[in-house]
Length: 186
Image 1 (tube, helix red, strand yellow):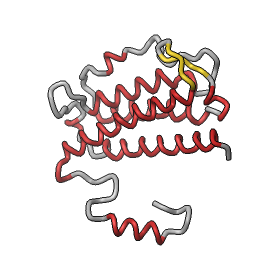
Image 2 (cartoon, helix red, strand yellow):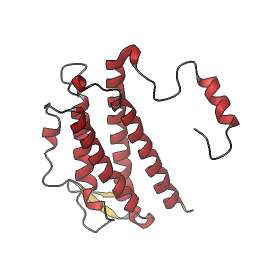
Image 3 (cartoon, helix red, strand yellow):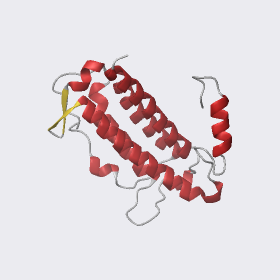
């Protein structure tokens, strides 16, 4: 496997992991908390999800069937500022937005080829290699998903169900990892 194949395989897997992390947080969110913020001017789960989905559709919608020369990663129909305005959103609507955005982004990643990584696309008229555009979004999406995790963890307090190794559980986790057959690590 060459480096470009390895990169695409890794970024696809890692971003599916970021999606799963966000889903672990969203699964602990209650209906009445979709619009909750931790401080004035903060982002609610609804705002974070709408922003992520809007960005994913805009940046990656044109790449869902593969790279095409002249791609622009900011659609003319996107209203980014509206993504940050609070509005009523049910949990079902929140999940639908989440799935829609991730389906577009992951579908685009799945259609990219190693040769696409060095090609150029633009975002708001600024040129980027496809590799650079992916890396930009990996950082952006991961940051917002961790904001979502922090938000829901804070709202849940003592009722939070950890999404990683529980406190005090590192030794047991390490033992399980060392005893697992190669390729079956959890």
